[in-house]
Length: 339
Length: 192
Image (cartoon, rainbow over all chains, first blue to last red; front, side, top):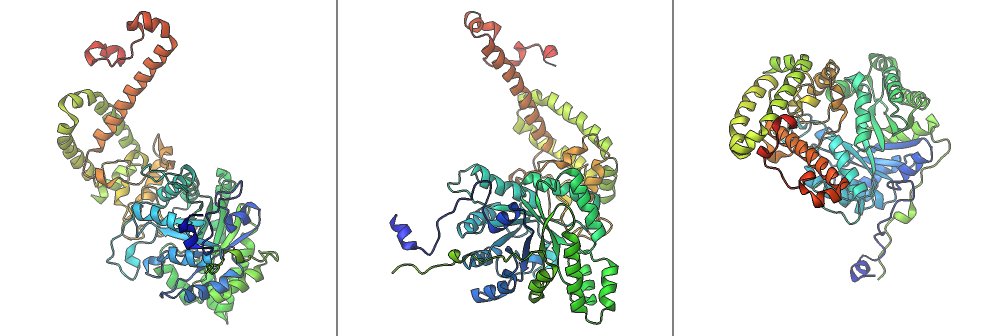
């Protein structure tokens, strides 16, 4: 052991190589490759520098999720960084999905961050284009978009599988990442969304997390086309769901958040309900149960912005875990360094 | 100009045909460009290219033109400058997330691909833009590349021949030459 290793003590685990047949060995990858129905959930990142706030936000999700997504300034609004949250949660024993948006960082920063995240034990990464800066809280910011989500996927795959930066320089310990991409099946151009998903798989995606699915017929058509293209057997697809709070909130989301499609029938159902929040939850549970029956769907991704307290109930009521309990890994928690 | 840009995408097949002709011409002219010096022809060709392509496609002179893979819908007009779009924010009717009055350039591209002979090219994953090449001529870059590839293919042919007849090459070197040939030593008619 070198003196540097001794300084670190036991508090940092050594870089673990993935088991055979796995690219990352992340819990999410193991669950999916074992053929189990996976659950991921999105964390609402705190506007705070206190790690306790991150752990508090993760607690209601960790009971039911195989991995927690740490968003990267979603909606172009500034919050604690995805890499910071992913690192904290990994050390606390949770599986995490580190989200990278191409909006805010160039290729130099992103490739460095991927190595940093991998060194911190992060094993899943979701490559996103990102919303435009104009919808966020600082619309005067410079939009970067040096990569797009596909060139980002191909870049991280090259780093992982070839052990090279995009410049061709060698990486001594490649980042073992399970590569994710997003898809939005319910917005235009509907006929080309499956083709573009196929392109993302070609670029390197191992798993897909979709945007909100509220329109089941549209999603079913999308999945049928994916099966025709043979893409469903090349990638794990987690369908995005979430509980609506009220008809008003649904309308607001539809017109203010980019890429969200909520059919009028769903909004009408929310309007007629005596208890909208409970109805929103019921719709979500029903959707999950219908979605899990669709061939080619490997799991669900719950995005319950400000309704995180409902996530656990939604998952348990839907019955998708079939009694399985996603476990926090104790050994990954930091141990005090020997004195 | 937005309307001309839409026209170009509607007629993506015609422009595909036209560009192929132009590309062949440029490859044919490559030896001439080489003699004048690629550096010297760069500025005038880039000027012409800028004029033609800004008018037709609202070209931003990224220097790494992919119009033939995007149905003549220039991806540099995407506010996120995606090279592999569309993003997930496309509005109903196929309008842009960031500029709601503009049709999404990638929706147009995928539609236009169905009209093209080589529409399958849109399925290829494209690399990020090299910002160092901004403002330079993409036409010249393509013709240099393709001319070099042709030379390489010819070279590979010669190498294979020399390898297949090593003894002949030793006693009669002119039967399987490997050294570079000056252009005048080779009949241009045969080469074409």
